[in-house]
Amino acid sequence: MDQLVKQQITNTKKRFSIITAAYNIENYIERAIESVECQTFKDYELIIVNDCSTDNTGNVIKEAMKKYDNIVYIEHTENKRAGGARNSALAVAKGEYIVFLDGDDSIASDDVLERLDMLIGQDKTDVIYLGFQIGGDREELVIPTEETCTKTYKAAMDKYPNPWSKAWRKEYLDENNIRFPEHRFYEDVLFVYKGVMKAKDYKMAQFVTHKYTSGRKNSMTTKINLKNVEDTILNLKELVSMRETEYTEEIDLIIKKEVKMCKKRLDNTFSFLNHK
Figure 1 (spheres, helix red, strand yellow):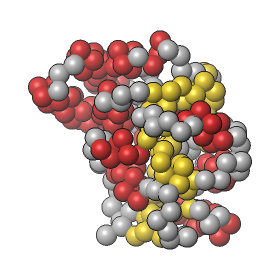
Figure 2 (cartoon, one colour; figure 1 turned 120 degrees about the vertical axis):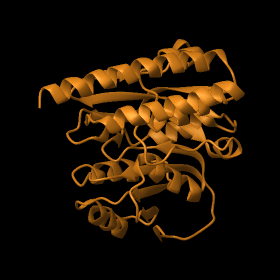
Figure 3 (cartoon, helix red, strand yellow; figure 1 turned 180 degrees about the horizontal axis):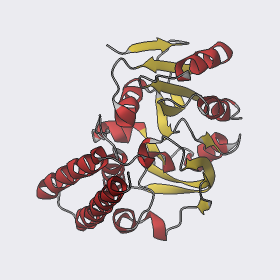
């Protein structure tokens, strides 16, 4: 059974639950934590799931817990990848809205949660699309627009089908049983597709909420192996199954996109093996 270490054990509802999956990021996790804890808006909890890290990640988190009393810490006894870690956090989250933060990324500025709170107001919006800044091996600024927030665009052309570029109403996720596949690469694809397509409404945060680190060495998404291809095929199988019971025009678009990604990953794997 996974070990749950909680500070301030309470059922008190929060405005936001910030969820961070952590695996072997000892050099980054403190920055992620500090970017949350410096927020001017304080009605939040930070849930960190250590997914069986083999480096010093766990100790860095425990040191942070000595400074901050709003951290909920979960230690996995089995590696479930990012999807499983996020599911563990969703199971205990008390926030009205969920904001995902990868452990090697950071919240962009100390007023992000305050601005999100003002944007949401008293509404019960299912999804809020967020702006983000990409750094690392490339530079890019991504700000949501009416054009890029349509369901057709998200299915066919969105380059960033990730959960952290959206804030999600927790009750909406629960009511629709929207969770991540576990033990799998590219777990984001199914979660985000379901979350976007089932949403009845959305808002746009047209400002930078996250700073995303691209191309980090040893990142799961930068490794090349057949597991990447196998998991892409698993995603495709689930999408095809969904198509049979919940057909939409958008699901054909995303299946087409994922088929292209599968071919690209096969080509990359073949090229990598030939150059070893």
